[in-house]
Image 1 (tube, helix red, strand yellow):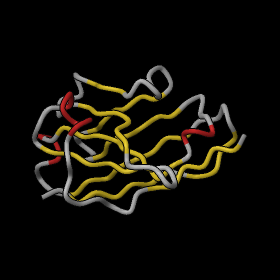
Image 2: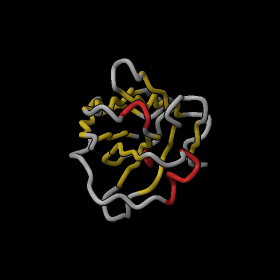
Image 3: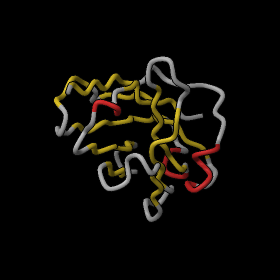
Image 4: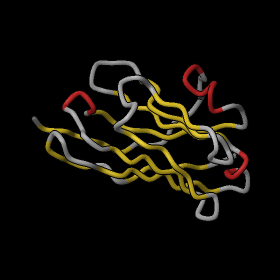
Length: 124
C-alpha cells in the first residue's frame, strides 16, 4: 500500500503559480497511476489531473486544461502538479491518490482513503 503526503500549497494572488508535491512511500508507487483531486468549501471532491505510471499519458479536467501540468519522478517517488494562471475558483484543498488502474479512469475512481491534503488559496 502507498502512503501519500501532499505539500506545496499556500496563498497566492490570481494569475500566480504554485507547484504541489505528493511524496509517496511504498514499493508500488512506480507502477501506480496517480491523480490530483481538490475539494472546495461546501463542494464535493473533484478530479483535477492524472498521470499514468510511466508518465506517458496525462489527463486533465476541462477547468484546468492549459493551466495545470501533472508530472512524476518515479526515482523520487513523487508526483507534482504545476499550477499556473491561478484563479480564485482554484481555491481548495488539493489531494493526491493513485492505484494500479488506468490514468484515464482516475476521474471516476472511488478511493477509500485520503491524506491530509494541502490548502491552496487564490486571492482576487
